[in-house]
Length: 238
Ligand SMILES: *Cc1c(COP(=O)(O)O)cnc(C)c1O
Image (cartoon, rainbow, N blue to C red; front, side, top):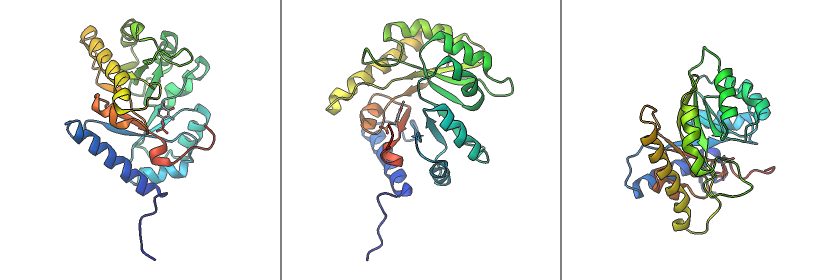
């Protein structure tokens, strides 16, 4: 038998994901290191997160609060891990998110942002925030409408315990690379508008691109790509 890397192993898939990101940056004529790989670990056990950490991965994204808190407890010894909350966020969950995460990507209402700011513990750095934008204008989807994003950003940027960093979106699935690029380009243009409207705020983050559309997102300026399936494999219960 030949000794080949098993495609199902985490080391292999993480290497593949990193190679994909490097190639996408190269194809987009962007410098290496200008986009960060966020490993989306929802539904996956803490042991896999620890393994990914041992392979050098530091940024992890979680969608479900209770599940995330349990894994964080198990992984409390990994003190340089960076936790991103990327799922829908209700009022009754804001305190635990404010206390246990470094980033929230899914802010779409001022009420939620105010609670996160009030509840962010004084001994922690301000909570990094992305506004989620409903860039494809889907009736059933989360996110602020693009035309309302600037007003919301203005209010969120004024909250003392938050640090507004940029925008996040999950576009509707599209068939081709060209079609995938359109909503990502719109999000990039919206960030440019926001940067002009809020010159005092360091808006440096475009959280866009997942396992199926990473290349298109990178070609339109993504700085944080959120990969789940491509790193950890298919999810059974989502
Ligand atoms: C699940 C999820 C991802 C990862 O999706 P994959 O297609 O598995 O890469 C990224 N972003 C958000 C907000 C998610 O909920």
